[in-house]
Structure formats: C-alpha cells, structure tokens
Length: 439
View 1 (cartoon, helix red, strand yellow):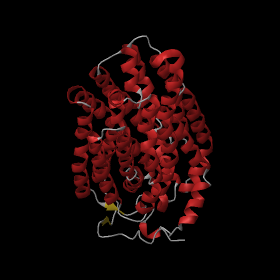
View 2: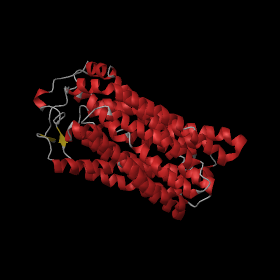
View 3: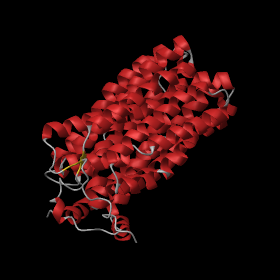
View 4: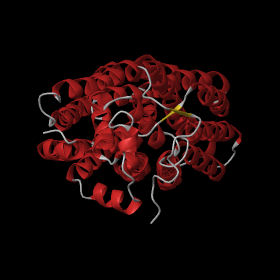
C-alpha cells in the first residue's frame, strides 16, 4: 500500500514554521469566507424553491430530490478521492479550484429550463463543493493547536449561518425583482473572483506542525491509518451525532421558505429578511457558542465536547415544534431563534473532534469519510424525507398542514443526535488520551 507521506514533503509553497497567530486568523478568515460562499450556493435553491416549483411544475418530492440527493451523491462520493489528494498535495490549490468550479455551476443553473438541466447543474455544484471542507479542516488544524481547534472550527463553521444569511438577503431580493434565474448569477459569479484571491493570499503549512515537530512525524501507511480511524469508538459517535443533527438542519433549512410562503402567505422579502437575520445572528451565536464552551469546559473534562452539543440538540425539539405550529408568522420567527442557537452548537465540537482523534496524515481523509456519511444521509435524504412526507400527508390534510407534519417529524432526528452526542461524551476521555497522549 502506498505510504501516504510520499508526497507530503514540504514544497517551496509550504511554510517552514507554524504560522503567527495574526496570520493564522487571517487564513481562518479567508477560509470562513470561502465556506460562506459554499453555503450561499448550496442554500440558494431553497430560497428560490417556490418560484422554481411554480415555473417548472414540480412536486415536493422532485423539489426534495433537487435540493438534496442530486447535489449530495457526487458531493459525498468525490470527497474521498479529493481528500486522498489533499493528504498528499497542496490543499490551497484544491480549495481554490473547487471554489471556482462550484461557483461556475451555480451561475450556470440560471440558464436551465428543465428539471433535468437543473439537476445536472446541481450535480456540478456538488462536485465542486466536495473539495472544500476536508482540505480546509486539515489546513485549520495545521494553523491552530488542538486546544483551540473547536473555537477555530466554530469560526470556520460560521460560514454556514453567514452563507445562509447572505443567500436569504440576496436571493430574496433578486428573486422578487429579477426572477429566480438571475439570482443564480448574482450569487455564483463572485465566487470565481474569491478563488483567485485565496490562491494568492494563503500559504500551505507543514502538516502536523501544531501537534509535533514536523521532523518527528512518522510515516503512516494508508491501510494502517484507516484501521486506526475505524477502531475509535467516539469517531463513530461523532459521525452519528452530527449526521442526525444535520438531518434536522437540512430538512428544516431547505424547506423553510416553502413553509412560510404556504403557511402564512408572506412575500419573498417578508420571509427572507427575517430568516437572514435569524441565521446570521441566532445560528451564528449558537455556532460560536458551541465551540467556545467546549474549548473552555473541555479543560476540566473532555466529555464537554459531547454533552454541550447534546444539550443544544435537545433545545431544538420544543422550539422547533413551537415554531412550526405557531398560529402566526411572528411567533414562528421568534421560536426559530432558540431553535437555531441549539442547532448551531454541534458544529465546532463535532468538527474539532474529527481532527483531534484522526491520525495527522489522514486528517483530510477522516473529514471526507465523515462528510461522506453525514451528507449522503442528511443532505441527500433530509430534504427528500420532508418532500416525500409532505406529498403523502397533503393527500389527507392539504399542502400547508402536510408540510408542517413532515417538518415536525425531524424532531426524532434531533433526539437521536442528542443521544449519540451524550454517548460520545462518556467514551471521549479515553479516546482523547489515546489520540493526544494526554492523561
């Protein structure tokens, strides 16, 4: 089997020493901006969904397929070979190329005229986005030590609420004023320019520089690293916790505009402006809070990396129910705030655990395998789950109540997530000690 360190020798583009704190946060800021564009381009179809449904005459099941599985299939499967490459080649180049690719396909979505063409464009977006997070997580772990990774990856994960916020703001206004096709152009084209800026601004660091001296990193064969990864109980616990949490997140986020449009008959701007603020503020607070609390409380006990997100997911259950069944839009928006705070709290802890528990030479692969399971199940089937159930329940209860019932079932996945994270909190101290040498 090939030694995964064969192509990892420092190139002329690699930093020979760990980066300064100031530059580390600059890199983190650029990567967070890239991730913001990642979620702008991923979220935009949910905002345009009611107009696409009306224009192309689609069912909720077909919309769920376009929002989820069409995007997720190649996004998840290509993540593995791209991560294999990222563990061997320049990660900055991979992210820059991927950003240009998914932004271009987002813009091309604006010229589609059929569901098939739109599905192909979404597949293209998924191919590009497969090259974002695995190498980005690996880069961040080489710029920040393990004691700060939950906070650093929580900041990176702010790209999710920020991306959704900007998608709601730009997408809602452009949709109402210029139509859904032009919205794809507006959010897609700037990403190509950002790809150029990123390539010029970020240096490739030495792998493992924040964990041990680079000269002491022992070569690890792919098969040995994979075997080690598969035998870490809490790695699987984190995968389960994040997957179930993301099922709730994607099932809600990719249908929320349809929900407000049908249930309360609001205009697009009346829907997207409040949702932009809620995602940018409430979801952002929850995302940062999860990373901050676990890094702080984790100094006293590593189990905090499991029980903090577990509490967050428990919070989403009553708040989500109250939001979905509110008799008016104001109540629905207000209860969405604590729902989004709770939903954001798993991101930093979950992502940081993957990087800390994984062998240094397999960090990008560990993240890609993690995203393979998470996104194939959560992103691929979360929106489809809601869409298919909505069609089923609509036959007896109508489109409004049918969608409400379908989205309410997501509470079960929040409960499963909380259970998986709590189980992880019990097993984590032992696995953390094995991975880091800390006792």
